[in-house]
Image (cartoon, rainbow, N blue to C red; front, side, top):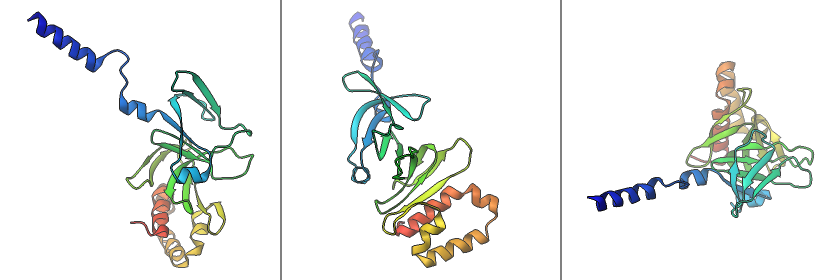
Length: 201
């Protein structure tokens, strides 16, 4: 009887042991950095360690694999990173202006055509397109990048200008939709047109 209790106790310690690492929690806090746009779209991220929660969004704090605490200043002009990833959170900096250190949630797309949204706590569908994001103002600020036609951080109509039929469809839909409904669904509409632009299903 005592032997059975001892075995049960050992099993419980193994399962709920002090300091046990939850693998899903570990993944949620992995910090990856992308030095260039090419690295980002080729999924060549550099693992830095485990992210430490912080109120300052410009300073990323993390613990390295050997337990040392480090911090990374995203607003430091001496250091440029195209993007970073913490768990499911993907933030990129498409604007090449050296004085602009704003990072945006990646909205989906390819290295030639993609979109970004100002916000955090993003969630994505199975194909990597943004479904929702948290913003401080409640408004959705969405921008598009078209490297083929050299359009950086533009609004959806300008982005669609290289596909006139799709642009006309967009204008017609906007004209018959109530402004409040349009503003409320701006993210979903933008992602839908990006998918159509790319021929995605």
